[in-house]
Length: 262
Image (cartoon, rainbow, N blue to C red; front, side):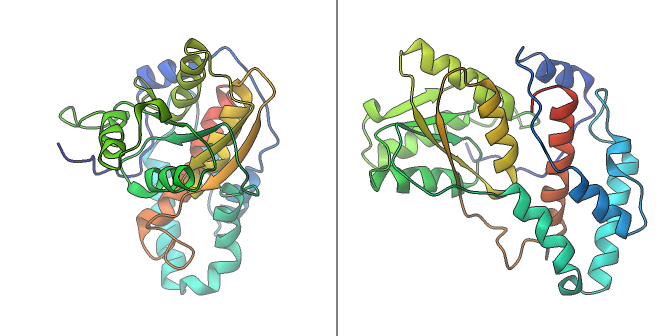
């Protein structure tokens, strides 16, 4: 079975939102600069994007239309002229820490190879002796796709990495479940790391970091490490999907804030 061809998406599925909302009883409130996005839209003379987001829907046609129109405007006026305003959007999401050895490499699942490759490179460079891969089949995936943990586990076998070095969390279908289910898995096997290298894509790093920080119930040093992937510093806004990934991430963070997750 082939990896899932993911497209950036938000959801208006109330059943799914309620499922995510009830995944954890932990409530946190970190200082998140949501105004980076709202100020960007204000400069384009658009509405505040968060006005279209609530706990019944993270997606609306009005929001979708506004995001597309905003891209057409900056595209028509040459993207490089907007670089000063565009760059902080991504830079804020992708903050990293100084890399150091840790007890565990925590790799969030996703079909793109970037996160897997980074986990393996860190492991082979002796930054940690264990890797945790989390994710089954993401929300919205096609039913015939194989679970992500299985896909990446099979790849580690091809590279000769021992089972003793791999921890698999097999149930998660979203970021919050990645964290909550993985912490539960670590407790079940009595492996309580004092330090974790968190591997994620640049634009999803801040949300995953705060989610892990909010749910881990012991002292733990979390080291953020961004995997490099197809949308890099030079091309991140040259395609609409690259632009949309970044803007959508602020909406997802806002939804997580409404749910009390971050």
